[in-house]
Every structure is written in structure tokens, then in C-alpha cells.
Length: 81
Image 1 (cartoon, helix red, strand yellow):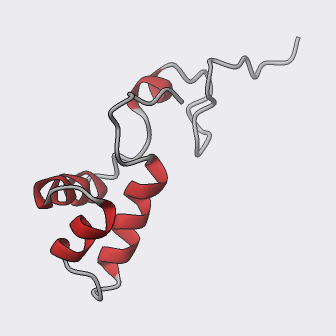
Image 2: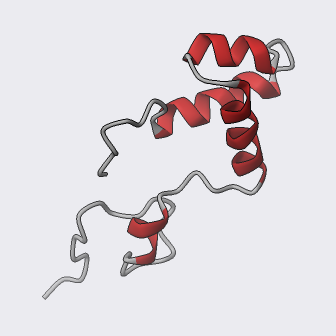
């Protein structure tokens, strides 16, 4: 997966934020301080989580097998020849 050089939150961070928020023990302010981002970024992450947008869009669109839970990275050909 290609990550922009200024990306602060990885896919695992996004999932961790959603998991911690759902425990109801962490507030948005605490999450923002813990992950060193703004509160607005946390709100954006939570919005995306509610819409289930944690899969990388470009890689998923290029996936030859759409029934897989995770899209292969790098355009791997899964068909046997």
C-alpha cells in the first residue's frame, strides 16, 4: 500500500481509533492528543468508520476478485493458468 509521506494515521491507526472510541472510555480530545492530530481529524475518521470506508479505494477498485475481504496489493493476479 502506498502511503503519502505526510500521512500521520495508518490504516491500523484508523481502526484503533474506531475501536477505542467504541469502548466509550476514550473521548475525541483524548484520541486527538494520543495520536497527535486535531479533533477535526478524529471526527473525520469516525465519520469514515461509520460509512465503513477503511479499505483503500484505489486498490479495491483494481481488485480482480471482489469477494475477498481484503484487496490484494500491487495488482496481484489470482487466476491460476
